[in-house]
Length: 69
Image (cartoon, rainbow, N blue to C red; front, side, top):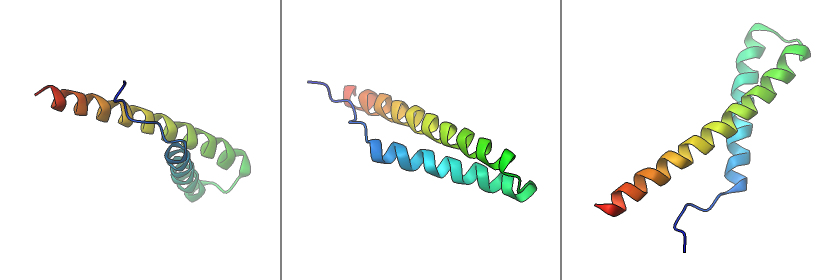
């Protein structure tokens, strides 16, 4: 039986939405054009999702190392 962390689709969704909101908000400071805000939100969503995946992998490895000690 694998003891890997179970993936949470809801958490991944919130991480992606948070990334989208942060990047779109930062871009809104400099430009209010939809041609800038929409791609910025999509890029932010992607970065938020990838950051969540990387963090989850790091935590899984750290927990596995601690179990071996």
